[in-house]
Amino acid sequence: MNSLTPFPTPYTAPQQIAFHRTELGVILSLYGRMVAAGEWRDYGISTLREVAVFSIFRRSAENPLYRIEKRPKLRNKQGQYAVIGIDGQVLKRGNDLKTVLRVLERKLIRAVE
Image (cartoon, rainbow, N blue to C red):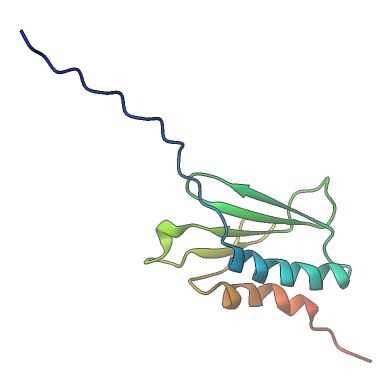
């Protein structure tokens, strides 16, 4: 009896979603301006299976003030980028990262007396 034994498939690591270099450039540019204004102090980046998260903290021991999420599965539906507030409310969602981050840039605009 001749039977074929299949070769074991090589192990492939689970896919992780991550921010691209150009996306990080846009995010870190805004982050740098907010740090210079004294609003933000720390950040964290998480790369998971279905989402990449850039968390922004006022102090490192607190919950994040904002989360910038990238979910490529929502690209054709609601938009792959989202800014989420401290209470879990979605502040802005869309496919263009710069327009989504405008909701956070409003914090930089202050009245001059």
